[in-house]
Image 1: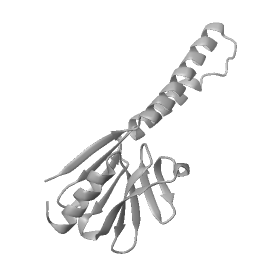
Image 2: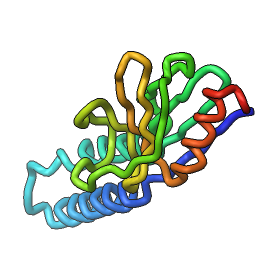
Image 3: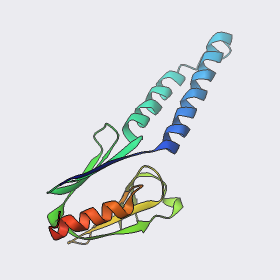
Image 4: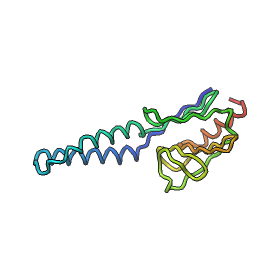
Length: 151
């Protein structure tokens, strides 16, 4: 049995998408009015922002017979934690000021795309990882069942 869930970062998409829209409108306005010749940076900035949306607009968590894997968007940002290395997991709530993304937090690492709910995984060697999810109870119970060999 396997768990797989993708959470969409709607606030990230809305904010970055809105920023791309504003920059594109500014670039079009400036191009039409020919007011500022040094505005060629708008295009590359928009491309970088769209790339960020593709890379960080969603978070997929997969739990199979061997590992818990977290992957952002369509890109290469992925972390895999072998089940044999996990001591325990539990539901937690992140402070709002931790934000979202891949980042170092007190005690370990956090992978989150939206919201404050997470599942904290602690490995047998004491490393901690927080995985943001919009279904923390389901994910924590599934990981615990995998650790016990029930599923």
